[in-house]
View 1: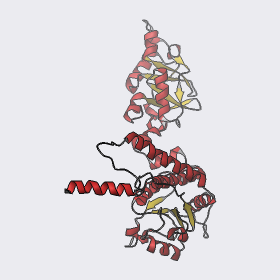
View 2 (view 1 turned 30 degrees about the vertical axis):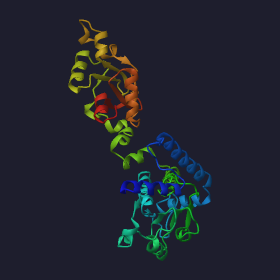
View 3 (view 1 turned 60 degrees about the vertical axis):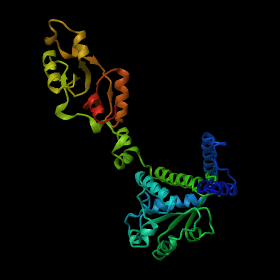
Length: 358
């Protein structure tokens, strides 16, 4: 038997022992069917996880909420808590843990990831008495927790464990155990963490979203933590982009169109807002109004007779994306920003394009 043939034979034997059949030239793999089977198994795992949530989940959310600055909580000395969620795990659980920590941090719950192997070589000092540990191990028998768990106990640092086995070291050492249902991995060899990591990731999302809603965390607060990228652009407000103060092209209703044209040219927005004596916005003058009212005496005509009354406006707190939608719907290029009927700014389509919103 050649080396290649021997390797193939061993592969077939190994797969036969695990209940699967290795692909061969005579029996190609139906990759679409494999994909559907994997997704179905992982979906079943999520369904089982949702059904298994109990009061332990509620207690975990409450513990994290209080530790990281719950709205109504004060410590013994009256100072607000300064704790964080310290997520830890190794291997695939570590990769999932990093994502859970990132999701918590970006949605209002201070969090960080500490690698358990690095923890026993000095990084335990990153975990303070004010924190709560979220340890992840599907089996619950992560050897690297051998030093972390006693450290947490010694300094009265609460620990939440995510595992499948309450009788495991992690299950027994956790103050709160969040148990994952025992379901089949999507891996046909029953070796690679697949369904279990999907459930763990989803449980982390569930914790983060429950805390987000409990805090009343808003889109504006989310943007503080996420100013960049498409998400940051999506959450920009009109007041972040608008022109204001002396940059605004404003004239009175009695102003001659000659002077209004000078204002339009100087401010370079292609329009002018028309206000009354109290500063309330009455109308707008654009190049369309000029074309519609072109006549020999246009320059001496009062602007109030030429303007388009009751123009479309927007609030300063509106999302910039809303301004884009209005401009597209009305086929216009600028909007006055109004508070209490008075113009406080102006936003142009070019501002939205530069910000990546339009």
